[in-house]
Amino acid sequence: MNKTIKTGIIAGLIIAVLLLSASCLGTTTSGGTDNTTGAATEQSTFESLWPMLLFLVVIFAMFYFVMIRPQRKRQKEHQEMMQGIQKGDRIITAGGIYGTVESVSEDSVVIKVESGTTMRVNKGSVALRRDETQR
Image (cartoon, rainbow, N blue to C red; front, side, top):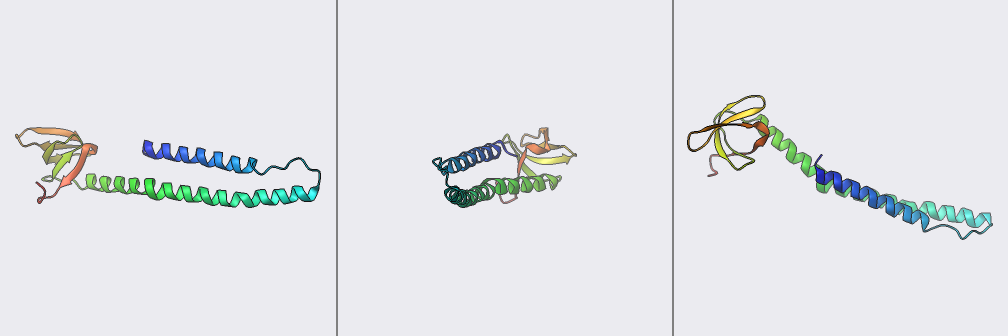
Protein backbone atom coordinates (compact mmCIF):
# COMPACT_ATOMS: atom_id res chain seq x y z
CA MET A 1 0.00 0.00 0.00
CA ASN A 2 0.97 3.56 -0.59
CA LYS A 3 2.44 5.48 2.38
CA THR A 4 -0.23 8.19 2.03
CA ILE A 5 -2.99 5.61 2.23
CA LYS A 6 -1.48 4.02 5.33
CA THR A 7 -1.13 7.41 7.00
CA GLY A 8 -4.73 8.31 6.17
CA ILE A 9 -6.07 5.04 7.52
CA ILE A 10 -4.08 5.38 10.74
CA ALA A 11 -5.25 8.98 11.20
CA GLY A 12 -8.85 7.93 10.58
CA LEU A 13 -8.58 5.14 13.11
CA ILE A 14 -7.11 7.45 15.74
CA ILE A 15 -9.86 10.03 15.18
CA ALA A 16 -12.52 7.33 15.31
CA VAL A 17 -11.17 5.89 18.58
CA LEU A 18 -10.98 9.35 20.13
CA LEU A 19 -14.54 10.19 19.07
CA LEU A 20 -15.83 6.84 20.28
CA SER A 21 -14.15 7.18 23.66
CA ALA A 22 -15.40 10.75 24.01
CA SER A 23 -18.97 9.70 23.30
CA CYS A 24 -18.74 6.88 25.86
CA LEU A 25 -17.22 9.12 28.54
CA GLY A 26 -19.70 11.92 27.90
CA THR A 27 -22.73 9.83 29.00
CA THR A 28 -21.64 8.68 32.47
CA THR A 29 -23.99 8.86 35.44
CA SER A 30 -23.59 11.16 38.41
CA GLY A 31 -23.32 8.34 40.94
CA GLY A 32 -27.00 7.74 41.79
CA THR A 33 -28.03 4.52 43.54
CA ASP A 34 -31.32 4.03 41.71
CA ASN A 35 -31.20 0.97 39.39
CA THR A 36 -33.77 2.36 36.96
CA THR A 37 -31.64 5.43 36.34
CA GLY A 38 -28.57 3.24 35.72
CA ALA A 39 -30.50 1.05 33.27
CA ALA A 40 -31.77 4.10 31.43
CA THR A 41 -28.25 5.49 31.24
CA GLU A 42 -26.95 2.17 29.86
CA GLN A 43 -29.68 2.21 27.24
CA SER A 44 -28.89 5.81 26.25
CA THR A 45 -25.17 4.96 26.07
CA PHE A 46 -25.91 2.02 23.80
CA GLU A 47 -28.17 4.16 21.62
CA SER A 48 -25.54 6.86 21.39
CA LEU A 49 -23.02 4.34 19.99
CA TRP A 50 -25.04 3.63 16.85
CA PRO A 51 -24.48 7.07 15.28
CA MET A 52 -20.76 6.77 16.09
CA LEU A 53 -20.52 3.34 14.46
CA LEU A 54 -22.40 4.65 11.42
CA PHE A 55 -19.97 7.57 11.30
CA LEU A 56 -17.01 5.14 11.36
CA VAL A 57 -18.49 3.07 8.54
CA VAL A 58 -18.98 6.22 6.46
CA ILE A 59 -15.38 7.35 7.12
CA PHE A 60 -13.95 3.97 6.11
CA ALA A 61 -16.15 3.92 2.99
CA MET A 62 -14.87 7.37 2.05
CA PHE A 63 -11.25 6.25 2.53
CA TYR A 64 -11.88 3.24 0.34
CA PHE A 65 -13.62 5.06 -2.52
CA VAL A 66 -11.46 8.19 -2.46
CA MET A 67 -8.00 6.76 -1.80
CA ILE A 68 -7.64 2.98 -1.88
CA ARG A 69 -9.80 2.01 -4.88
CA PRO A 70 -8.33 4.55 -7.37
CA GLN A 71 -4.77 3.66 -6.28
CA ARG A 72 -5.40 -0.04 -6.86
CA LYS A 73 -6.92 0.72 -10.26
CA ARG A 74 -3.85 2.74 -11.30
CA GLN A 75 -1.52 -0.02 -10.09
CA LYS A 76 -3.46 -2.64 -12.03
CA GLU A 77 -3.41 -0.54 -15.23
CA HIS A 78 0.35 0.07 -14.87
CA GLN A 79 0.99 -3.64 -14.26
CA GLU A 80 -1.02 -4.56 -17.38
CA MET A 81 0.86 -1.94 -19.40
CA MET A 82 4.22 -3.33 -18.23
CA GLN A 83 3.16 -6.87 -19.14
CA GLY A 84 2.08 -5.72 -22.61
CA ILE A 85 5.33 -3.98 -23.57
CA GLN A 86 6.82 -5.41 -26.75
CA LYS A 87 9.51 -4.61 -29.29
CA GLY A 88 8.79 -1.45 -31.24
CA ASP A 89 6.64 0.25 -28.61
CA ARG A 90 7.39 3.90 -27.95
CA ILE A 91 7.67 4.55 -24.22
CA ILE A 92 8.53 7.21 -21.66
CA THR A 93 10.45 6.23 -18.52
CA ALA A 94 9.80 7.60 -15.04
CA GLY A 95 12.92 9.75 -15.51
CA GLY A 96 11.41 11.38 -18.60
CA ILE A 97 13.49 9.53 -21.22
CA TYR A 98 11.70 8.93 -24.52
CA GLY A 99 12.64 5.81 -26.41
CA THR A 100 11.66 2.85 -28.55
CA VAL A 101 11.75 -0.67 -27.13
CA GLU A 102 14.51 -2.79 -28.70
CA SER A 103 14.11 -5.89 -26.52
CA VAL A 104 12.19 -7.03 -23.47
CA SER A 105 13.32 -9.43 -20.77
CA GLU A 106 11.57 -10.55 -17.60
CA ASP A 107 12.63 -7.59 -15.46
CA SER A 108 14.24 -5.09 -17.83
CA VAL A 109 13.73 -3.32 -21.15
CA VAL A 110 16.36 -2.18 -23.64
CA ILE A 111 15.31 1.08 -25.25
CA LYS A 112 16.80 3.04 -28.11
CA VAL A 113 16.83 6.80 -27.59
CA GLU A 114 16.80 9.46 -30.31
CA SER A 115 20.58 9.65 -30.68
CA GLY A 116 20.71 5.91 -31.42
CA THR A 117 22.06 4.97 -28.02
CA THR A 118 20.56 1.97 -26.29
CA MET A 119 19.80 1.87 -22.59
CA ARG A 120 18.70 -0.92 -20.30
CA VAL A 121 16.07 0.18 -17.78
CA ASN A 122 14.02 -1.64 -15.20
CA LYS A 123 10.56 -2.59 -16.44
CA GLY A 124 9.03 -0.85 -13.44
CA SER A 125 10.53 2.48 -14.49
CA VAL A 126 8.47 2.57 -17.68
CA ALA A 127 5.93 5.27 -16.91
CA LEU A 128 3.73 5.02 -19.99
CA ARG A 129 3.46 3.77 -23.53
CA ARG A 130 2.97 6.43 -26.18
CA ASP A 131 0.62 5.99 -29.12
CA GLU A 132 1.76 6.82 -32.63
CA THR A 133 -0.53 9.87 -32.55
CA GLN A 134 1.29 11.34 -29.54
CA ARG A 135 4.41 13.31 -30.42
